[in-house]
Length: 200
Image (cartoon, rainbow, N blue to C red; front, side):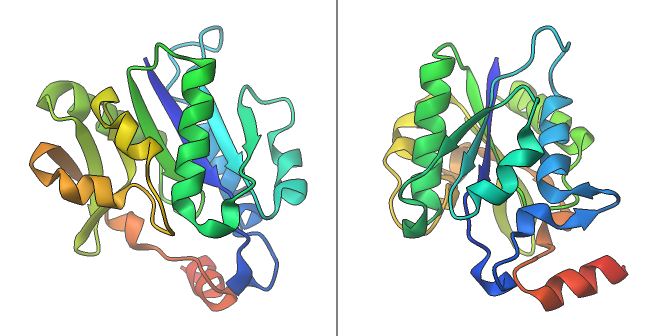
């Protein structure tokens, strides 16, 4: 059984204080879109996959988006140190809640083209390839969404700095299968980025 971590702890400083997790695209906030895509992986509502949402800089603003949904929320007190701390907090929480977790899927909230179909492809490739990591390829690099087997949990729990799981993926490229995900290159860091994206 895979578990899912949604990293939503950033303060969106380049957005002028407006959380990019709450950008509305096709009638839903980016956070809600990501969460619904993750929830769609569950085989039934009665047996949902464990999902942890890591919050930080804007938790008071984004928490209402999660009201009534089957997720665990956790605050990362060290969110300002970078994404690595959110990965650590999310994975620690997930393994505490669901110690039987057989893999972990990492998701961001600023990739609007992530869909249930993409996530199902990642899970299928993970099961078929025998690789310990499945990532997405876009803009000449490999990144998230990405799925990791338990043999990489310790490395994820020891990440430091302002980078997420990419160092683990690069270090173990021989054990990493990839899916082409051109939409992953969309970058929503500034109001201009958002305005240009919403015009498309």
